Length: 479
Image (cartoon, one colour):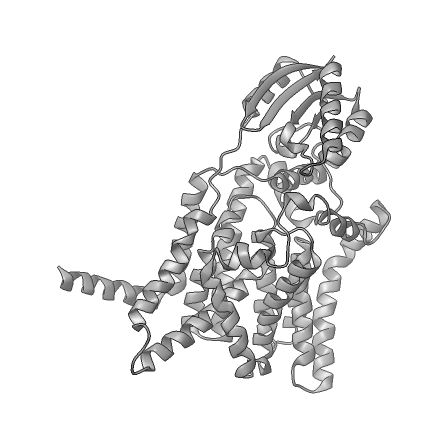
C-alpha cells in the first residue's frame, strides 16, 4: 500500500512539474468555485459599483453616482447590464476570470525575475491567500486592478522591446483608473527606472515612454473631471477625505496590519527576512527586484502611516509581490536546512509546516456571514404599488437588482439632510438602522438619529418591518 502511494505521489508530481501553471490555475478555480457556492453577501461598495455602471450606461437615468470612485470597473459592469446580463452574476464571473489571470501573470513575473520554482510557490501562496479568495465574487475593483497592474509590470520586464515601457504605462494607467492606489505600481516602476544603472539617454527614453503611456490613459478621465465638476482632481480630493471619515467603524493604529494580516496569515511573516536578504545580498542592483520590493514597501508605508482608516483588503495590491518575497525566503531556509549537518528541522517537516501555515488560517480568515436579503419583499411592494420613480435608501444594495433612480442617505452625517432634500420626490424608502451608527458614547448623535427615525415614522407608512440581531429593517411608502 505504501509503495503504491509513493508511486502515485511521484506520478502526480511528475505531471505537475510538466505543466505547473495549469494545475495551479485548476486548484485556484476549484477553491474559488467552492467559495462562490457559499453565496457570501456583497459589500456596500459592490452595490455602488453596480449602481455606477447602470448610471454610466443609462446616462444618469438609473443607478447612483459617487465622484471619488474610478470608472473602469463600473463601466465594465454597466456594459454587462446593458447587454442584458445580470450584473451580480456577470460581476462574479468577471471576478473569477480576472483572479485567475492575475495568478497566471504573477507566475510569469516570478518565473522571469527568479525561476520556475519561485513562480510555483509564489503563485500558490497568492492564490490561496484568504483576502484574495474573498475578492472573488465581491464585485470590487481589486481583481481587475491587479490584472491590469500585474500586466503592466510583466510588460515592463521585457524592456528590450522598443515600445514595451509605453504599453506598460498604458496598462498601469488603466489599473490606476480602476483603483487609484494602483498608482503605487507606477511610482515603483519610475523609481526602479531612475535607480537603474544605464546610460542617461536610455534612462530618459524609458521614463518618457512609460510616462507617455500612463498619461495617454488618464488624460480622457482628467478631461471628464474638468467638464463634470469642474475640478481635475475632484475624485482624488473626495477619495482622500472619505478615508478619514467614521474611522471608529474601522481598524486603526500603526500595528493594525501586523495584527490583522501578518499574524493572521503567519506565512507572510517570511516577507521580512527577505527584506534583510534583499539588502544583504545587494539584490537591489536588479531593478526588477527593486520594483516589486518597492511596491510592497510603499503599500505598507502608505496604508500604515498615511491612511487613517485601516482595512486588510487595502494590502491586496501588494500581496502578489509579498508572496514572491515569502517564496524566496522559504527557498533559502529550505536549502539551508538541507545543507545543515544537524538541522533544527528536517527539510520534509519544514515543507509540511509551510503547507499548514498556508492552509490552516484559511477557514478563520474567510467570510461566510449571511446578510438579510429583502429582494423579494421590495419587488413585491414595487409591483403591488406600481412604483417607477426614485427609491430612497440607507444602503445601495437595491441598485443591484432594481432599474430605478436610486438616492442613498449616505450615512449618519448626511441622512437627515438627504431625506429632507428628497422629501416628496421618492416613491419608496428603505432604512436599515445599522446603516446609521453613532460613535461609542456619543449620546448627542444617538438622540439625533432617534429623532430622525421618529420623523420618518410620522411622515411615512410602514409596509414591511423586520429585526435581525441589533438591526431593524423597514420599508416605507410616503403618506
